[in-house]
Length: 324
Image 1 (tube, helix red, strand yellow):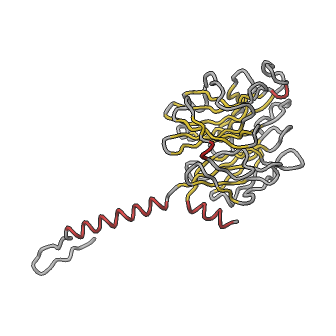
Image 2 (image 1 turned 180 degrees about the vertical axis):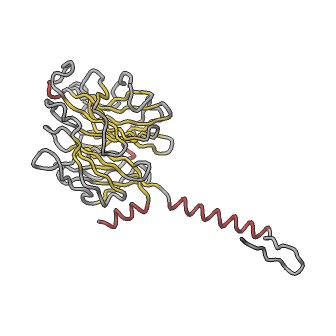
Image 3 (image 1 turned 45 degrees about the vertical axis):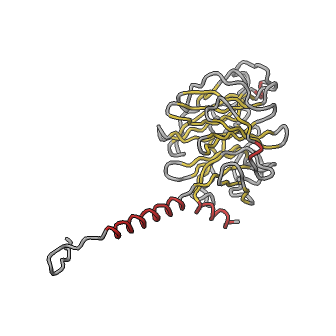
C-alpha cells in the first residue's frame, strides 16, 4: 500500500514540464552509457606452429585490424600422439554466453577432436576428447573441426574433414588424402548424434565453415583440397545441414586454406590463410557471389594461423589483457 501526500490546499503536486524533460535527458544518457558499456569486441582464435602451445587470441574493434594477446590461453592436454597439439581452434558463443571451443588434436591417426568450454576465456572446463570417428577403424584423420550454433534448432553442429580409404571415388587424390566432411549435433556436449556424412562435392574437401546469411539462407565456405586447386570456394543451401549445391569457381589463389567469416557492418569479411605466400588475406562481400580483395586494409599478429572469429564484451577483454 502507498499514499500520496497532499498539500493543505488539497491539490496533488505534479512534476513540472522542465522536470519531465530533465528525467528524459537523464534516461537518455543512462541508456547511452549502458549501450556503450555493452560494445562488442571481435575476437580471433589462433595457434602457432608447431601447435604445442595451445590457444592464441587476437582482438579488434573494427574487424580489420587485430592486436594479439600474448601467450597461450589454453594448453592442449589431450590427443593420441605423445606431443599434445592444438590446431585449428574453432569457437562459438552459445545462447547462455558460454564459449565452446573445438580443435584438431592429431595430425594423423586420431579418431576425434578436442573440446572445452569457458565463460571468460580464462577459466576453462576439463578438456575432453570426442571420438566421433571411433566406428571407422580405417579413418586416417579428423581435421579442423568447426563449431556452429544453430539458433533455430537450439543445438550445436560440429563439422570436420576425414579420410576413409576407398570409401569414395579416388579422383586425383591418394586414397589416404581423399577427404569428405562429416558432422555431429549436440545440445549439451555430453550426448552427441550419430556421425553422418555432411558434404560430398565429388572431390577432396576440408576446412568448411557454415555461415547463416539469412532465414533459410546459408553459405558453406570450403577448401577444394585437390592438388590442382588447393583454394577456397563457396556453396549454398537452405539449412545449416544442407544439402548444399554445386561449389563455385575458386575465390582465392592456389595454396590457400583455413577460411573464417565475420559480419562487419553490412559486409561479410572472409579471412583466409594464404599459406603459399605465407600471409593472411581477406575478401569483402555482401552476397557471397561478388567479392572484393581488402587484404591491404587488414593487419594481423605475426604467425597468426587458422582460427575463427567470435565477439566478447569490453569487460572480458579487460580481463584477458590483465591476465597477461
